[in-house]
Length: 173
Image 1 (cartoon, rainbow, N blue to C red):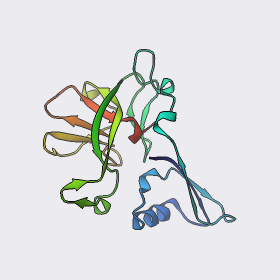
Image 2: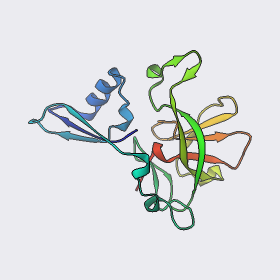
Image 3: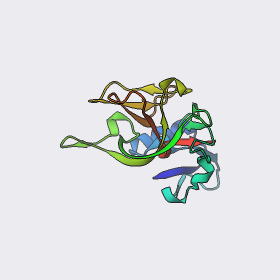
C-alpha cells in the first residue's frame, strides 16, 4: 500500500493533479505532498512503506490506546483524539478508497483490502468526526464526515459497541 506520495510538478496545481490522477484511475486520495518545481517537470515518486515497518509503540500506548490523534488521510480532519481507542487485531474486508466510477466489479466481487490492524471504539459518540454509509447487508462503513472519503472503518449492526478504524486508512499526528 502506498502511504506517502511526492509529486514534482512544473506549473500544475494540486486540483489539476487530482483531476489527472482520476483520469488515470490512480488512487488520488493518497496525494499528500505537492511540490512545484519547474526543473523536474511532472514526476510521481511513490514511497512504499511495509505494514510491519511502522513502529507500533509510536502509535499504541502501554495501556493499548492510541497515543496520537487519528486523522483523515485526505483532508486532515480529526477522527479520534489521543487515548480514545484501543488497538485491536481483527481481519476485516474494506472496499477500496476510490471513486465509485473507478471501482471495478467482476462477477459480484468488489475491489478492496483485508486489513487486520484497527482502532476499536466502543461508543459512536467518542468520534470527533466520522460518518456512516447506508447499510450494506448488516455492515455500515465509516467515512470522514468532512470530505466523505472512505471507507476508513467498519461497524457491524449486530454489535452496537464495536466500531473499527483501519490503521492503514488514516494518518496519525
